[in-house]
Image (cartoon, rainbow, N blue to C red):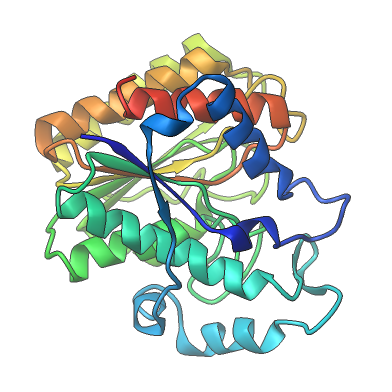
Length: 307
């Protein structure tokens, strides 16, 4: 079964300024590397639809959705927090990012593809139920998870968030939903400066110090995340796929390399094979060194596609 690669032209139009690390060049870096590795044509390419308001309302307050929509500028930039701004194309991009997440769930659940990677901008895992932050507006992975639960009737799902920053928005949305297990590894103390002491039965937070490299990361993941995933027996797995833990990424201080992202992907695929009929939806989060991002995301996608 093929791997779906879901994107949309609007993702390249959302920009928070030439200086901003969350730039359109991130997607170009991934696609350039996929072409260089001769993997691009082996993927099933799909264009993300716009999300429906009812799908956003599963994870965001109505007043917050209204606020984001009303904040969309006709020109220039409008800041929703100190590092999260909208240009005239951001709202469309955010709607298609969340819509791509929904499409990925539908295509995988219908068996039309084996798994999916959503190459989305803006990212989503810092967006809480009622707040934009950390470059995020709508929580794409949360929209995907809620759609799997409500539209497809799944009883147990899991999110593996391997971005170098804690997925605080996803935790905010699902902390009281035992159907959802969120497993998050992240540098601590580090933005968004939370998650080290908020674990509960369905929230598995693994704070790791600056300087954590492959061996220590793999040991922590194996000991602290894998047993919980196996016990939860998720019927579908979701990745908040951040590649900003790469040793070349100056936005953080982890020491991961491409082989570590392959290893993480293989662990998730193993759980999916045992409990979820192989069903995985992965969504792009962070990763800001363009070369490291392109290489790491390509290896993640190559592993998902078993190429």
